[in-house]
Length: 426
Image (tube, rainbow, N blue to C red):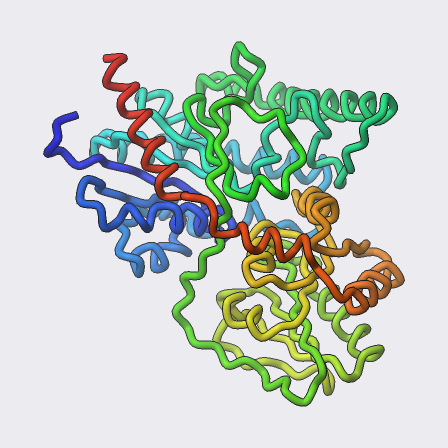
């Protein structure tokens, strides 16, 4: 690569805050560096956000604007059947996205790609075009474990005895078997994509063989069996919402509690409001503020449910969290790191996906209490335990480590390393 030529860095992610925003925050420090030419590929829903940051944005699946949401937003909690249906839906659009990306990468002369861990078409396109690529992992434990407690099994706690070692081994086998069965069901489609689930080392091909950046804090992780190319880059907790929100006046209450279950679990929005209403009856001197996470309705007025319960269709975390004393949330990566950033005690009520595993890590780190969504008694107890606790030393400690990761430096070094390796292999 000649010194005068700009390095063309392409970033690929679905149009979801938890996937795209960490990548945007990661690349923002590179924008002022004249040696980089950066472009983002995502859905139409986040084009305005990317361009507001001064980043060139190419819309993916422009003719199918609702494709990503239709797959991600399930009407009920996911299970093996729903996951399979999601995968089948993905298989219909993956070839289209691969073709779009390959055409754009060729036209633009892309040097390197940074792809979110679920942006599978980006990795396939890069492999086809021999472009080095980096995987961004906002859920690091999504990487299959080789010797430790597996994830996505409802939130297993690690235990150091023979019974649990056997349990973990069976769990890892179940996960790999499920993936193999699903891939076998669509083997014809995968063959046309020249895609195999595992490489010769038994590692998943959906992640970069060159570099994987763990978006998160090592302090929260008990696993020690990540691949050698895995690097902790630190937490990303961005907010690109420029709207000024009016926060409900809670000055007459002793404490304020903020509740949210993110954007995706549409089936549980009313449940979170019900939790707030139930707690509101038991604690009349505490104000409960709920966000339903619907960004498209961010301009709607806050709704007063009772004297001490208010519901926003959407309010930005950076507006709500500084004003809250406590937080009740679903255990999504985004809000969990926001809570750490703002040093707020919390109750985690995991709903779906990776949230059970985040709850396990938060509990082991002693930075939150965990409750069962199906048990009102469990929620009430966890909430009371949170109120009763006077000191949160571990939360304070992890909060103080939040900004100790040189994320921009790590990313630049990885870009340089991969491009240098590409030049040496020519």
